Amino acid sequence: MQGNLPPEAEEKIEELQDLQETAQQVAVQKQQAETTLNETETALEQLEEIDEETAMYQEVGELLVETEYDEAETDLEEKQDSLEIRVETLEKQESRVEEKFEELQQELQQLLSGTGAGGPQGPQGPGGPGMGGPGGD
Image (cartoon, rainbow, N blue to C red; front, top):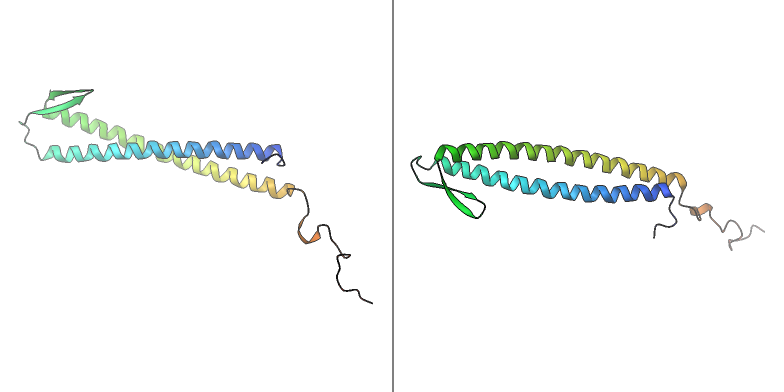
């Protein structure tokens, strides 16, 4: 399929495919982090509406463990801060991958247009004047 491409072009195509994979992975991670962040923010909002004396439980693995209001609030706020940083980091990574992808695409296009992919080149290709046009006699 790519056997007639110059080795540099094949290399760029492989890099593009790797970058595309990376971009998809980063997008999935970012979506997961955003979802967890939204859930954490919702939990914090709900926590504000709960009386501080209400019995509260925190999920620890497969168990629910009783916890204090202040501890639950602190844990959620720390989780929120951590997730905000994670989302921001993933957004920056996503931008860098996107820029690199566009840069590689341009390099590949220049490589391919510079080598001209070989074979007949448009109207100047084989055929020329002896192809059955009307004679000038």
